[in-house]
Image (cartoon, rainbow, N blue to C red; front, side, top):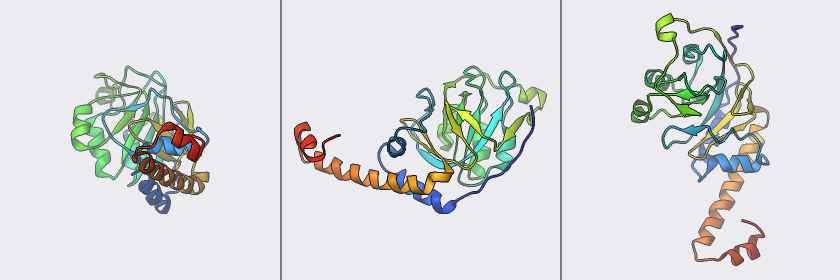
Length: 223
């Protein structure tokens, strides 16, 4: 496979705004709502344990049927990044495990999203480094035997969970799923998400007062 190793623009100013909105309930759903339900990855891609994260996408394209460990991504990743991997949806070969998670955490990389499989979830949970995958399996790649690790591309447009992900796009992932926010619209979207989260919190408090469905519809016209 053609080896392409690019970088992308990091926006710590915007990342801090995404971090703030991430504290709300169902952040992935909030960001999906304000994008008219777009940018949502396939529902099979779930966290290995309870977690939530946001960050900018460091994208990885692997060769279907010839998967390698994306170690090059760890070399290139920086604090605030989320590694997003197109592993071709392979459910039977893990491209991420505990040791990789520990190395990534040391660099400030926040998480990994894989259109494929992962493993070592007990270790990953203990060190607090989350992954979102289609499957969990004990089988790893042949990288540990062959030493091959660079048959991949870094920071190119990829498809992950049926969603186009460009390098630097913002990822919002939680227990519910994964939503992608294009970098080009991130400033507008994060502000809309903040407003939506604040509205929902006010409505939540209103409901907690003992209101009924009828009250809710009369007040807001919708849930």
